[in-house]
Image (cartoon, rainbow, N blue to C red; front, top):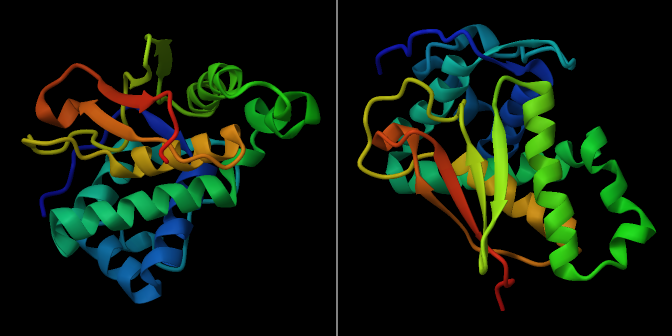
Amino acid sequence: MEPIPKSEYNYANKIARISIQALQDVMGKNGLNAVLNLAHLSHLIDNFPPDNLEREFNFADFSALNLALEEMYGPRGGRGLALRAGRAAFADALRNFGALAGVGDLAFKVLPLQAKLRIGIPAMAKIFSQISDQYSTVREEPDVFVYTIHRCPVCWGRPRSDKPVCFIATGLLQEGLKWVSGGNEFRVNESKCIAMGDEVCDFVIQKTPIG
């Protein structure tokens, strides 16, 4: 796999660390090390990014991780692992970030479901915009919310794809929605992807829970 040229944008070390840890939890240490080697990130083996909010983890490196996952396990296998890692990353750590702290409060828990989504989804977008160079916005439509990543670390600089590839982001949103809503699962589909030549990555979130 060709290295992805470095970008001028960075992720917070902590988010990269959480994501790599989540991949290791899902794939095991040997699986993770093989992916890191393939992604030209062997310096991260047994040496995860520091547990701080400095913006030092290059978007290109995060994208290379995701591309290596797909190259090693195939599109379907890579997708499943990335979804699981995204969910694990949120479940393990991201819900403790400031913008979402109030979502655990009793006053929030008694709100109607749609009110929770209206508050919780933009709160997730705000976290990433605040602690990384990933810029995210949310808009509401009659039946869906559209979560847009304008600068996406998941597919940064990747070769052109004929389908959306940002599964770790999809998994993260799925688990975030489950937490914000108090246990419901929601359909999240990436409808636009920068890797396909679109200007942004759009994730369409159905307002009605599954089942």
